[in-house]
Image 1 (cartoon, rainbow, N blue to C red):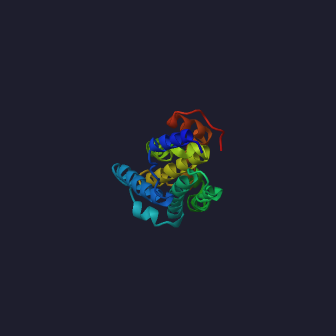
Image 2 (image 1 turned 90 degrees about the vertical axis):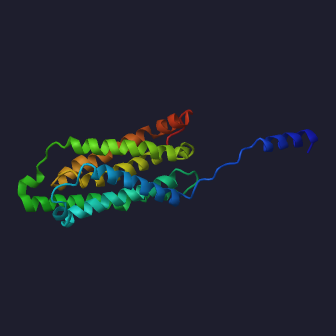
Image 3 (image 1 turned 135 degrees about the horizontal axis):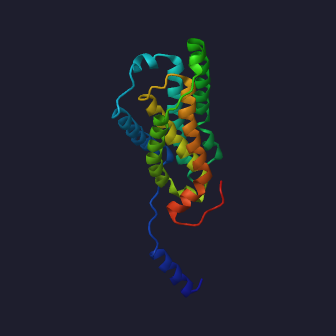
Length: 224
């Protein structure tokens, strides 16, 4: 090795800045769950809880969808922080799937229960834009912060990370809204809660690459 090359290497090493290592994904996910859960809880309780909440949640067909939404949000959060890192196993993206299936299956059971309990009234559909608005605003507020925390996902799987982050925040928002808004049938929850979560998740997946490129101020990468 020549002296000139040695000097060049020494100069490059001298100008290098120390890289700050990220906390383990599970630690970061845990901290985010505490923050986002607290945010949703405060935002929810500031509007007051729904009337007859104790009796409402005493029903298994109500409690199970709530637990399903909550678990979906928690597991999607963990998956977000793992998938955002390059080189992680692709199986992490499937982590929230069991909870999501529980959420959907319990709502399906709830629809049948409402039909048996209320007859045709259990299948009635009306507008509930206040639920849509509450989930949308909460999801956008939390989602914008979460995307900043995992902005390095542009180098790995930007679209999948955006999808999971949106599923995380919108599912937690849906669980929080359940404590406030009076949707008495599972069909209405399926339409206005799960429907809103689905729209936000789809939009995030379609625009994930652009989102991370905009955050980083760099050209778009191939979608993943």
